[in-house]
Amino acid sequence: MEFLGTIINYILNLGAPVFVPFIMLIAGLMVRMKLRDGASAAITLGVAFVGMSMLIGFMVDAIGAAAQTMMERTGIELSIVDGGWTTMANVSWAWPYAFLMFPLQVGVNILMLVLKKTDTFNADLWNVWGKIFTAFIVVAVVTPILGSVIALILAFVVATLQIILELNSGDINQHRIEKLTGIPGVTCTHRMLFFSAIYYPFDLLLRKIPALNKPMDAATLRSKLGIFAENHVIGFLLGVTFGIIAGYDVAAILMLGIQAATALMLFPMISKLFMQALSPISEAISDYMNKRFAGRKLFVGLDWPFMGGASEIWFTVIVAIPCTLLWAVILPGNKLLPFAGIINIALVVPAYILTKGNTLRMVILAIIGVPFFLFVGTQFAPIITDLGLATKAIDIPTNQLISNSSIDAPVFTYASSFIWQCSQGYFVPLILAVYWCIGYVFYARELRKEYLQETNQ
Amino acid sequence: MKKVIVACGSGVATSQTVASKVTRLLKERNLDDIKVEVVDLKSVDTHIKNSAAYIAITKIEKQYPIPVINGIAFLTGINMDAELQKIIEACK
Image 1: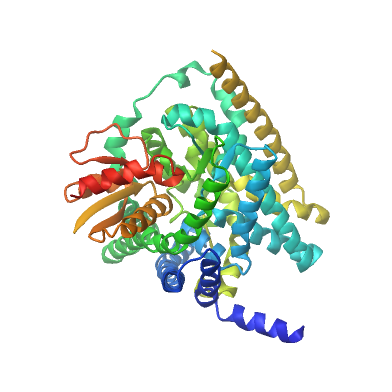
Image 2: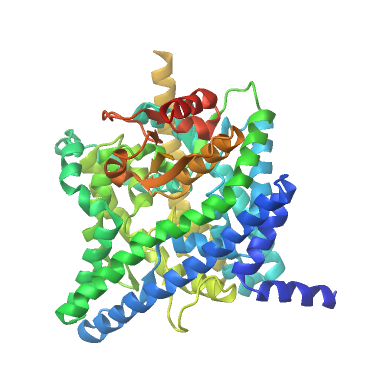
């Protein structure tokens, strides 16, 4: 037993860039990939880890130094570097149990379909990392309270709950999404839609204000502001802003601008490699599911981008950027300096579906939503940093924390992982969990009513 | 060498899934001279000029000078062969 433990420790100590490709190779052979293709995919995955690690290190050097100077100069302590969702995916895939989430998601989905508890097949096997993310947060929170074995079990229980809720969310949102996008037969199974539950009570109030319910031409506004949604432009502007606040000289300000632009432009380029490496596995699973349920009419659950044609989404995303920076400064307890996560899709897409694309209400809801993201991002920072360092998925100086200002479904993820702290007398996660559940139930009821009304006529 | 572009909002996950799938399907048909490239949705216009087709994941209202392919088909498997044929035609 001790011998086995030594081997496992040795493998884990190799670091994610080595052991995850190894697992990937085994998983690839299991879905009958050729050895040559499997090896190529595995090495690509290793390259993705090292590439991300380099880039995160580069970003932390540039932005972390500016944040430090900003703090000394202004007293505003925003010491946690925002690595965006790409950093989160990187750390998640490095979790030693990550690949177990594939069979879990597929298994739960099949079971739900067979039992007729859902009509959605979640074909989005990239966002399996969202379940991994929740699971490792649960492990980190629960281990000191209940021990490591129970923590691991609970992590998979919560991940299962998330898988079920994503399918349910796909079911309830499908009709409205089809109406908004005009694309039949698909739905969105991304957990970012869970955030609608938090917006719902606010939106009920906003609907009562006639001035907010006028249609707005988001397409024109977007074409005027469009350039600001490009990663490198946003990166440059943020870098320059941080440089000015930090009191750098002109040369240093411009250099920080270009460095920040580099980080934001390269993040998606490197992240793409993860997807490239994992796609044979996700394709094999998709093909299998299509065969297994051929003949039954299923909604195919996808990631959010098929809704990305909506100008309302991009306009609101841009407007949310300065609001996020402002909130970061004034929100008590916030330590996160918004950067790579600032193009916050998870903030806006739930509002888009909830308001059926009403731009004014989307903007107001997004402004209300930002503090939730900053709060959860700050809370998760030590956990994310620890796992990243332990698995060698990130390589940053000690004492430096990293997190994300756009964690998908922040309230659900926080509540379902931190709720165990109730036993230590801390009740904020419980209150948020209750708020989320009530919001979700009533929102689901509205969507159901709408579906029935519009299909009966 | 003909180039086909795929775009999605982040230019990472969804578009890369579609690109990998299309690349594999083309390879199975021995069409190795078609290159499938992933681009950011916001920079589609700059890539249109030197591409043979645009695989879109969103609904397209704008008119493009090159054929627009329905990328959702490659995610759901429905009508996938027809859409693949359109790509092959565009690259002839």
